Structure formats: structure tokens, C-alpha cells
Image (tube, rainbow, N blue to C red):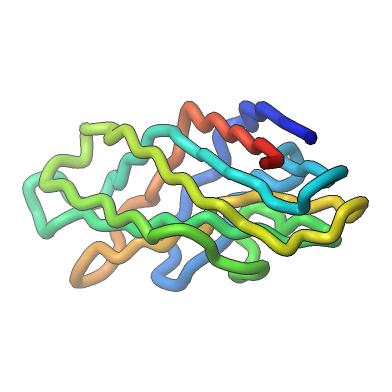
Length: 144
């Protein structure tokens, strides 16, 4: 059984209207050494700084994992999406909203290193006017 607890540095935010990776996998990676089944829990804060008192400030977050080289911050979406996508919606760009997501992934190859990351997209309508920022990120990975 293998476990990992990671607190990556806050990534640069995004204004992308397509999913981009946050680059957390360079810090958050683990190699299964028994079952090849991981439980992943990621939490933090999200803030969309687009237009206070304007249109809704929306963003969507999703957990991704993969093997090989971890994606950099701002890279195109890669890896496999797991768990449920989370949508953040706010009318006030000064609020940081706490979030937490979890997922279980099975069928991982024992002895192969896997990275864990967040894919993030800014979906503020009609168009993004400020970045979506993640902060205070904590990643827990436990081999079951």
C-alpha cells in the first residue's frame, strides 16, 4: 500500500474557455505497489475574478490522472478524467469558494508512476474578463 500527501504551490490562473491543466502533477504523483487502486481527494479554494456584479462568474474543475510526463500549467487537457466535474458559480468576484473532489481509480499498473492534476475552464458568459484562480490546494492519494 502506498500513500501520498501533497500541497503544490498555487498555480497561475486561467482565462481559457477550453479546459487546461493546472500543472499540479509535477508535485502530485505516486506509484502503486500493491492493488493498483487509488482513492484521490483534492481540495482547495477557487476564485473567478471576472466582472463583479456583472454576469455570473462560472468555472468548472475536474480531476485528471495519467502516466508519463505530467502536463504543465496551462497545457491542453490530457490524461483521463475521473470523478464528478465540479461547477463553481458566483455573482461576486471577491469570494473564494472552498471545494473538494474525490474519486477512486482502479486498474493502474503496479510499478508505474501516475500524476494527478486539475483541469480547469473559465465559462463566464458572455466572455471571460478575469482569470480563475486556485489556491490552498491539498491532494491526498491512498492506495486501497
